[in-house]
Image 1 (cartoon, rainbow, N blue to C red):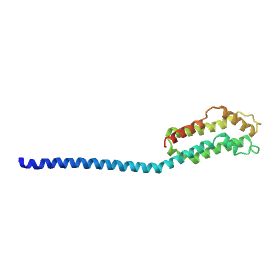
Image 2: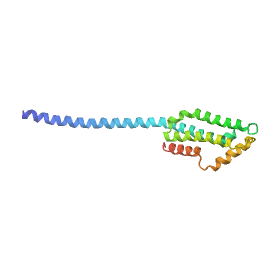
Image 3: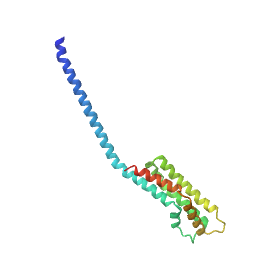
Image 4: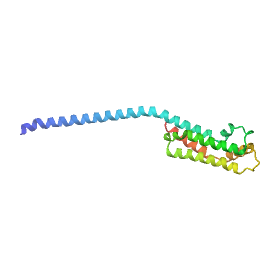
Length: 170
């Protein structure tokens, strides 16, 4: 019996040591492969995510009152037509970019939605404060003045949050 233990005990110790070394090597190799896959995955997803951030930044810029007014012929439009054009354009721009929400955090997306809603409210509110005989040029001037006096607007807040989050990808 002691003879058997003399041979089997060292063999079991060698077997256990070999198993431990191989197990550790395989775990390290698996971790290395996972790290490599994550690195490769990140190199593919980051450019896509950045395009999403770019699209949302473009959306926020396009729905500012200044930008919307640049695309209008104020001389040919009534206040109602201008207001309708701006509201329709804001909604269309937003609807066109709604899929970009998958690339940003919930907080940033909520800020984008709030910015859109507040811009719609702002456009409607400015129109409601005008006299009935006002021109679209007066409406545009009123919006630009009110918009610049607001301090940091919801659009600017959303854009700031968007930029901060995009910088974290680097």
